[in-house]
Length: 225
Length: 263
Ligand SMILES: Nc1ncnc2c1ncn2[C@@H]1O[C@H](COP(=O)(O)OP(=O)(O)OP(=O)(O)O)[C@@H](O)[C@H]1O
Ligand SMILES: [Mg+2]
Image (cartoon, rainbow over all chains, first blue to last red; front, side, top):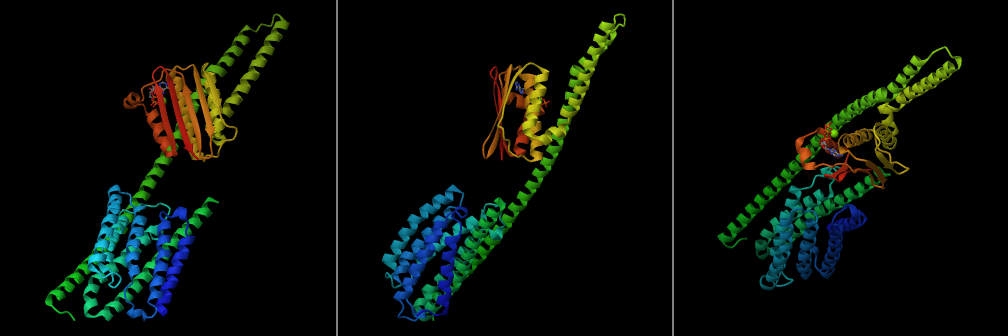
């Protein structure tokens, strides 16, 4: 039931979880949200795979779990990014976006998708749009850190990871809706491949950002000694 | 694959939209990095400017300390050594050899005075070496300044300080020392105070110096406008050594100046 790529996926996800647990909480604002997100992500991904274990991975249909996980992911990442955004207006907008997001998600889940059967691409894209805006804003207004170089700044890699993963997914989700009727199998296959590969990049960058913060803590410790 | 031309054009536009989005995000990404690097450059420029300013202030403070030292030497020569030398001269004038006993007495007096003069000169050369004071640190420096003040006039001066002083690097010490001198100079020049107190306290994170006098006080805003580089220098120098600086003064009620040096 698990093929090779699945195993790599789980290894990366688990490494991200472990590194996030090692990463120093005090040196990493909002780390707790990432930890929760990764752990919940792991559980939901695993349960989807177990439920679909009688399908070959490529043919696995979307699962109702996605309908819960996708909004959860949006909220966790937004709350995380909010910790870093300084401008009050943006913070308010993020809070406001939660309400809109939940309403939109509910509307589409009930009236548009047959719950649990379709892949909720529109709901996903809606949150992704917001997430890309928040992380671009954050990246653009990144606070200068005199102790750490840009490429060793965890939040820089997290923003990069979010932008890469979600702009890719966003792009594909648009096309998916057309493909899924005309060529279902191709649509599933593409989704799986794009998702997996983008997720590889995402988790690798996430791992790297945790490693950066672990290194900072070590160097901060040795410099105070 | 697609049934209608409408669907084809929808796919077409969504792909175009996606590509535009990608380009847009890539642009933002690159701009962000450039912007961050500009911030970095600006930070380094500012740091360099600050360093330059620091060395300049350090030099200035050194010169001012020397200048004050010369003044103190002048004062000491005139008021103490000069006095003793005059006394010696008076005794010499009075010296007569008619009565051997009184002459002996006079010579003894002169000897005693000469001894004192020599001791004073030694003392002067030791105590007025400004660099030495700085090497000994703020604690000894404060003691020294208080000694000098006591010589000038009969203020009541009280200095309280902790027995243990933190290590402060020599550059900061020089600037801080000069600040102390400026504050005390102002006090003796303008305050007409009867009582002056200097309280030094120390915690883990900071060293606090509180200068208080019960003199005539002044209006800070007006004096800052009128100019006089002393108060302004105090403020900028405090910032350079990463210290908090506060002046509280009320007319007829005296002046309190607080310096908090971050350790
Ligand atoms: N402790 C004090 N008590 C009363 N007045 C004071 C006191 N300290 C300062 N002042 C007033 O503040 C004014 C400004 O002081 P400041 O040290 O800036 O200039 P200055 O001493 O006149 O000149 P400079 O220090 O440049 O030789 C003084 O002229 C004096 O009137
Ligand atoms: Mg002055």
